Length: 330
Image 1 (cartoon, rainbow, N blue to C red):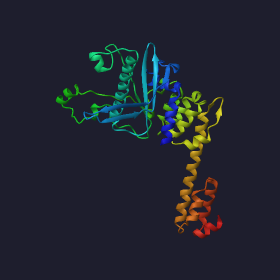
Image 2 (cartoon, helix red, strand yellow):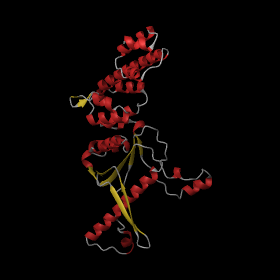
Image 3 (cartoon, one colour):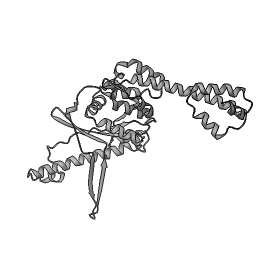
Image 4 (spheres, rainbow, N blue to C red):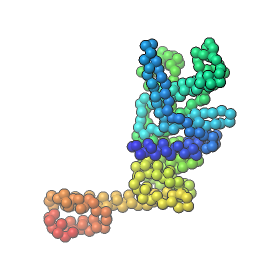
């Protein structure tokens, strides 16, 4: 689990991919944010709260990745939270993160005015910022890559214990809502909106549970899949649950890995394993009718990796009257 989390975090820290993530998710594939427009930001937020008795409490939170983008004359902060497990309080969690981040911006403005020797008065002094001061917008994205469907709320309103009565609908107009921007990597509607390895990653994860759909996707996108970068290849192996198999076929050619060939080899290996397993089950069913199978014999049979040998054993078992006779002839 930790390996997948670290893998996704490191993968998206690449500014090229991060820009692609923003453009594909927020701007529907339009190339608004460029790699050179991004600067990595501190991912730690903290706030010191003090009660009437002067007792202080520190509220501190950490985000996975935070990048600031310059778009024209303006800046936007894009925090990304990588999530492998469904989180039923995610809207509350993300709302707290954003509140701390905005509070930090206000503090920064206050420090800037103090450094410049500007003495704020009245409402501006109480606020810590001038009337004309503006905050940088924060656009968080939750990247979910878990194995089960996301079934948690995506906004505060859907978490509230309120029915759909007309009275409550009127009440909701006055209850501030907060909505998370959820990107479910296994169900991205338009993988084509992404231009980096994210396109292949999202496209193949969409077919994760359907081998026929996976084969069709590979056949349709052979050109792009014939040279995939190593990081995309490794992460895909982790997310598909085939990390060890992918590692074996990680052969770089012409600056990339031929994922089509790798999948063909993995698929053939899985078919071979399936044939061996099927033959072993037939053999064990035959032997159970002839007596008790010892642990030593069971281990020898189940650890066999040669389907031709197992088929030979099936013929011997069919002719043997006892387990002892079978063991003597193999």
